[in-house]
Every structure is written in C-alpha cells, then in structure tokens.
Length: 288
Image (cartoon, rainbow, N blue to C red):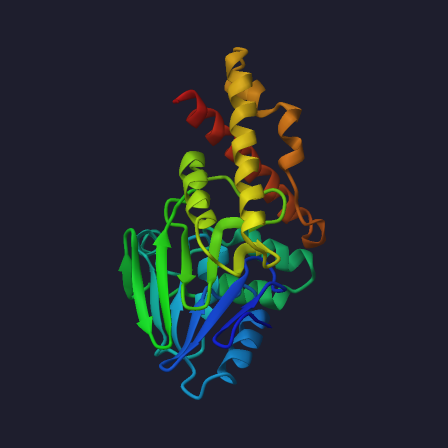
C-alpha cells in the first residue's frame, strides 16, 4: 500500500487493475477492488485498519472484469456500490454468476497454478451497483470530495475519480502507464479528449488503471501514442489499404505488449484485444 496523502492510498502490485481508497469521516471509500480473491482479502484487511468505521463505499470505474469481479469478494454487505449506469446495465445482462467476461481471469489463475482462486472467481456472484450515474457525480464525504467523471475512450463507461483537495486523480483505464493498452472497445478520439482533460488538471499524482503511479508527463506520452497511431492508420488509409492489411501492418507492433508472467491465456487475450483495437481505429479513422 502506498500512502499518497494523509487521506488517500493506492496499490499497484496486485494482479490486473490498480486500486485506490480514500479515508473519510464516514469510513473508507474503495476505488475499484482487486480481482484476485487473496488480493481482495489482503486489501480489505489493510484498509479496515485505517478507519474504525470500516469500508462504506465502493466506486467501480468500468464494467470490464478487472473493475467489477472484485466486488464479489467484499465481505461487508453494508458497503454502498457506486458505478456508471452502463456498469449496471452490463452486469444486469446476466444473473451475476455468468462466466462471460471472466474466462481470462480464471484461465490466468490456472496458468499460474492457483486453481482454488480460479474456482472462487468462477463461482463469484457479482452484486449490482446501487447508485449510478451517466456523465458523472460527486460524493461529498469530508474531508474529501470525489468527483467522478465518465470520460470514456477505453470503454463507453470508463470513469476517473478526481480528489481536488489532495491533487490526486484515479484515472482507471483512461490512463495506462505501461505498453499495450487494452483497446478492444476503444473510441480513440473520445479517449484522446479525456486525456487532454486530465492533462489540464493540477495534480501531484496520477493513479493509472495499470502500471506505476505517475504524473501529467506520462499522461501526455500516453495520449501522444494514440495521436501517433491515428496518424499511422490515416497514412495507410490514404494509400488505399483495406482493413485486413492495414491492421496487420507491422508499423503498429511497437504498441503491443503483454506481461508474459501471467501465462499463455493472458498473452493470447492481449493479442486478440490489440487486434480488435486496431480494427476499431481503422473504422474510426475511415469515418473521419
């Protein structure tokens, strides 16, 4: 656990998405929750020691499994769940126990020889959020203010949590401080616009969805990668390339990366989502 300020903490060492939390007079506010059951239990134990009132709120920043599955492992049933309306809608499509969207996490746990945790993820029932928003909302929980902004880009629901008093933003996957961002649902111009807004903030810390805690310079570099990808795809389109050949062009290979320590299932997943992202990019650039 890294203490960013007196009232804000974050963790970047868990598998999959980064997580954060705010310590308020009302109790602890979770910003996402670890997917891996043992990580979730460890995180909750550490946070409960920071407030006698325990965990009171959970903000889920997206509907992808690395931002929702962990909600099933929160032990206190009184925790109030806050999320974009699209998260509610996506989770409502199943009964909360469907394996859709969690196969990659199950396979990865098996690949790293953690079958018991793979089974926990498979059997988890995901609770629906109770408080939802479309474009954003604000939680006033002294001494902190949690400004939740639905910026999109990574997915239509992807949301960042800005805490102005502390000069910290938890960006979810709007910012990814490692190579090869997940792009299977990417809306690139919306993503670039969201990154430009984050660039405009006066913040001391940026907690990305993945990768190490950083600052505005890393946000700018991440944005510039998308700007470069847009330009490269436009050049291929100007040369008359069709979707199949343009998205297979090796010019984009420098933007791909996968953590090989997570096993073959994860690498294959990353390759599929990267390819889908390039197809999205082609369609968006072609549409102008």
